[in-house]
Length: 272
Image (cartoon, rainbow, N blue to C red; front, side):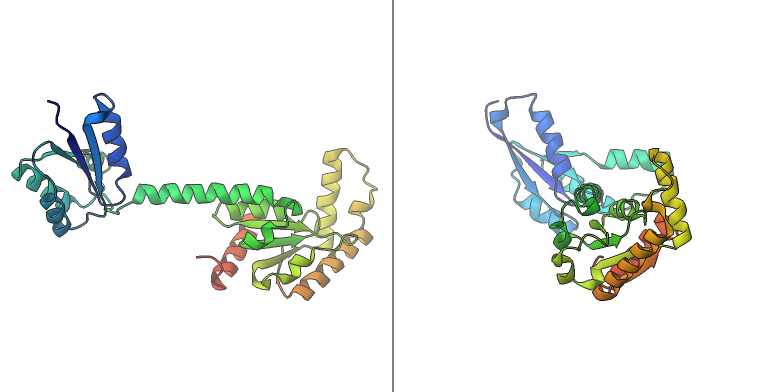
């Protein structure tokens, strides 16, 4: 048989899964004989009727992935009634999984695509956090959902990564008294800036542990009370000038701090 064969993809969502199946299958034949057409968002019996009306019974095939069981059954029956070759690519798997799990399918069109989009959004947020960590790319301030500020060892980076795993784009900037923060910082919406601070005793302990881990002298100015007080007072002045939210991380886990920030951003309408 040399006539062209049309394969109609009918889907509750975008039809990507069924189209991939069709392409993988026709690769075993003469590709030039096949034409693929996609009909998307088929979620009602009326949509099925409209699709069937435009599909000729000769040299046509339907491959469908419909999540609504009744609509899928209706499509299968109508296609057969009109003499159209039809293949249900989803129902057999859903029925098998129902038997195995004892649960009913959620019947959510595009659920897999939504999961994929969520995954890739998370990857983008993580890559963004890495690129904009420790002030490496201050241009990211404009694109970020939130900008974290803080002196050394106030959990800026761990908090950034925790937020990134929630699909929130974070940039962070270390505050050092000897280095003026970029002017761009003061042009941002203060609602998207969060200052991290901590207690003197807690920070001294953390910094001493850091010096020990690096094999450096415990007498370094980095962990001295005077230096820590200077840095905390400096950061507090910056926060006051910006009018931003401030969180003391001394007695909070990274997850708790991240949750407070995410809640603040949602309350302000900066993230969904």
